[in-house]
Image (cartoon, rainbow, N blue to C red):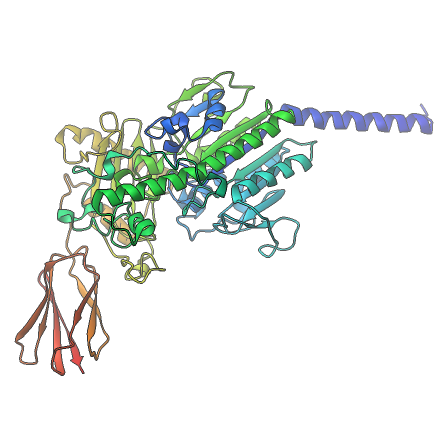
Amino acid sequence: MCLNRTTKNQLVVLCLVLLLSFYNLTAQDQPNIIFIMSDDHTSQAVGTYGGRLASLDPTPNLDDLASNGIVFDNVFCTNSICTPSRANIITGQYSQTNGVLDLDGTLSPSQHYLAMELKSLGYSTAMIGKWHLKEEPNFDFYKVLPGQGKYFNPTFREKGRGNWPNNTITHSGHSSDVITNLSLNYLTGRDKTKPFFLMHHYKAPHDFFEYATRYASYLASTDIPEPTSLYSQPNFGSEANRGKNDSLIHKIGTSISKRHIVRNYSDHYYSNSSLQGDALTSAAYQRYLKDYLRCVKGIDDNLKILFDYLKDEGLWDNTIIIYTGDQGMMLGEHDYQDKRWMYEESMRMPFIVHYPDLISEGRRSDLLINNTDFAPTLIELAGGTVPSYMQGKSFMKTIKGEAQGEWRKGTYYRYWMHLVHHDIPAHFGIRTKDYKLIFYYGRHYKTWKYGTKSLPWLNNSNLIERTPVAWEFYDLTTDPQELNNQYGNPAYTDIILELKDEILAQRAEHDETDGTKYPEIQQVIDDYWDLGNLSTETFEPASLVQVFPNPVENLVNLKLANTVLSETISVKLYNTLGQEFNVLLEDANSIDVLQFDMKNFKSGVYFVSLTSGNSKQVERLIKL
């Protein structure tokens, strides 16, 4: 049958209409996805999670989202630090598998699996806000902060503006406001023939908590509730974070109080204050929390703007909205700041899901989830199949209200950055619904870091060195605030043995072993794994690394190493006849630098002697 030109043109138009209808139907059938993540927004600062800050109503808009969605109460990161957590999320893999162990790690564009999988399912993909994975994002569109980015007048790298990393543009305003506006611009101009996947990431409330000026009066006259562990916790921790006879409490774990002598919020906020003791600690805590919560308020207000846009544009009902933080945050609990620890406040993540098609009313789940599970779940929600290279598991059945079936007994955790930035020792462990077991192995996987500064920007920084090995065990059913280390309690022996077996099983399953890759760490594991109540450490002798200046006129400095793991040390000064001339230090430890004045000493040769256990070291010193 022959068709005239008019009929042919009509058929072409009909085919185009049918094709566009198919694409529109596909876009309508597949849900849009917005993955919202804030930096360091911990669950105890989200109203719906309760706790001591809930009475402040810090997140009314997030709480509204939660009231008609599903709130997950047991979501944990596997490595509580920004870059590794983000790599876990986008790859669905644990840190050793994706290669990002710490802040120095990079993730190549070929590993941006979540975006790649959703793109293959027909999604238009976009990444806006804080990226922190160094390499160029493998998304259809991106506009991301370089590194940490700035709170005010931030610069972004934008796809289509030139070659990475020189494709920059600067916007005026506070970063939370700017990032929201950038996402709204993307949504308005997006390809409407496709469903969209948008990763919308705020910089806030990362330190140092620079809030928009309009929030300066927020909480100004409010007394923020304080955790009891800020002041007293006699049964908390172990030799790993306290030292033998509390010898390390001034070195391990940056603090709110002046406990940590190098980095604490008391000195940061009130360096010239007459306040002392608990009064100073309380004032520093109040300042810290108010600044932090003002940043959170800015996020919550911006989310209302985003949510109202979605409702006005008819996108609300067919858009999956997920809200989370990249990890937790210590808000003064145990007198700690920052994250990194395996304690609850640091490793727990808020996780709220909105999806009216599957969630008709507010629900909560206590399923034990970690951040490697996010990507598999989103892929299944988008209609795809979880790829075999992902180690996480989809919990889509729980979102749908169905029985999840076989699931993990505990979630594995590992922090690698031994003492870097916040003087927190390296550790790993397991967290089940009822218990937590932590193994502090106290070694850096990069052995060349020993003897370098833990806080390289500070002149008075502690040095990175080996720290005591110790176990901690907490019964979360009776001690949810983790105030009582029960590792030495015989009543828990069987449970602890089971948890050790589970740790070994998950380390093997997730390629998280050390073996020949990190032999020093593996040796520590071998030496201490089967010990009972580990209360003592194998001591290593301290050493005198440097005497400077030498020759000296007045002040002389002795730089010491390995004083944390040594027995008590003594430092004495002798004359050339071998006679003891002066005792500089007696029965001490945890001293990095010893300084003394030789102004009134006679010119000549002296000898500095360091005694540590059965070890003795002597260095020559010349007085001008």
